[in-house]
Amino acid sequence: MFIQQETFQTSFEETNLHNQTCVICQEDYADGERIGRIRCMHTYHLDCIKQWLMQKNVCPICQHTALEIGHEDEDES
Ligand SMILES: [Zn+2]
Ligand SMILES: [Zn+2]
Image 1: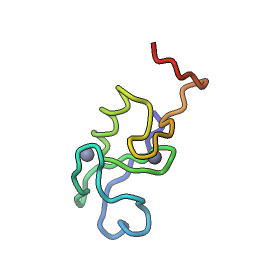
Image 2 (image 1 turned 120 degrees about the horizontal axis):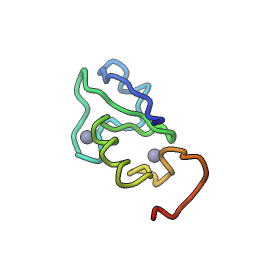
Image 3 (image 1 turned 30 degrees about the vertical axis):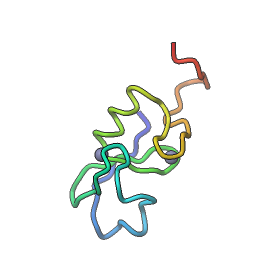
Image 4 (image 1 turned 90 degrees about the vertical axis):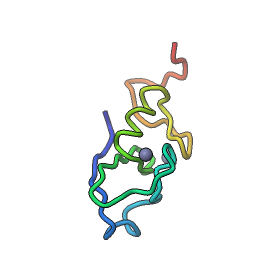
């Protein structure tokens, strides 16, 4: 998986994160929570984005392909 894992700290919320709320569960990040950053640089709770990507390989915010899997293939069957 190409999820960059980080631990959220309020000290870097302004500088490092594009979004401070996980749009999957609609919860704000809290200090010490595990968050995951995908290729488009959007961030989510690590657990939330893992669950999401098991069903859909797109960023919930920008619809960008989240994880590169070998070759581009839109057909998920
Ligand atoms: Zn979440
Ligand atoms: Zn995105």
